[in-house]
Amino acid sequence: MSAVADSEAPTSARTASQHDAAEFLCRAPLLRIEHLGVRYGPQWALRGVDLDIWRGDVLAFIGPNGAGKSTLLKAILGLITPTEGSILRDDALLPTGYVPQKLDIDASFPLTVGEFMAVNHPGRSFWFGGVPRRWRSLIMETLERLRIADLEHRQLGTLSGGQFQRVLIAAALLQQPQLLLLDEPSASIDRRGSEELQLLLHELHAQLGLTIVFVSHDLHFVHHLAHRVGCLNQSFCGLGPPHEVLSEHFLAEAYGTSALAPGRVHFHPASTP
Image 1: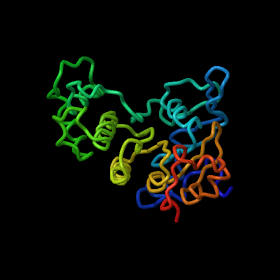
Image 2: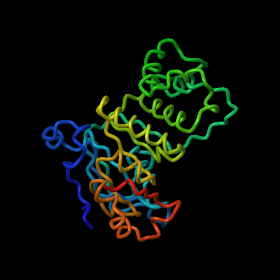
Image 3: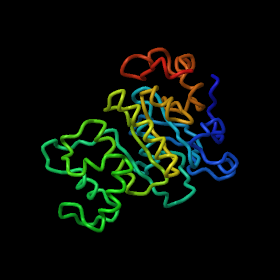
Image 4: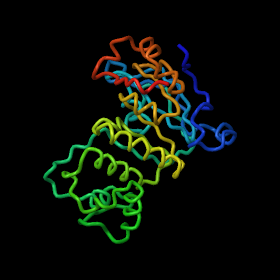
């Protein structure tokens, strides 16, 4: 395999949206994952993951269903306790935002975008409806950054998949995170919406200095957003730049040709040079 499973800093990442390379390399990693393993009962969901995640990184994880991608995100979030190994943080109080793959909300429930943002405001203790005046400035600034300020009074159930995804990202940004985690961000949107989301995340990465970690089956999306790509299949089987990892040869070697079948990992011809 041409991609390597190591934890070196991503010196081949796209320079247009990175910090100065020398500064990027001399810092300690934002997260250091060592010998990580997670077991559900007798079954290992993930094992043997060693990885450094660097400030300013845009790191994607790919793999077939059941490969442990979402388990890894949950471990980073602290939602599950590793069975073995550890996750070391450069900052013990690392501000982190999370965008789930889906959020089940009754389409008939009369909750507006503005109210949803208020519910997710980090300063909320009690909420009595509406958008409190003291939170309005931050909420509107965040909606404007996602270019959805005009949706403030729309009910969540009336939004398209792409609009709702932007609302979820806006809610995550209310935490003013340094690290943004996304689970299958392009799964519920069409191709045009996916391309717009790529550009938006590039902008957020550059403007806010975010470190972005996401999982996806959509290799076209991964290729155009990620600086590095990690392969999971219940263990860590590769890490490298997109042009190496997303080649059909590497994917077939890492996962077998069955992994490229519809519904497993989505390969698009334009996702390799």
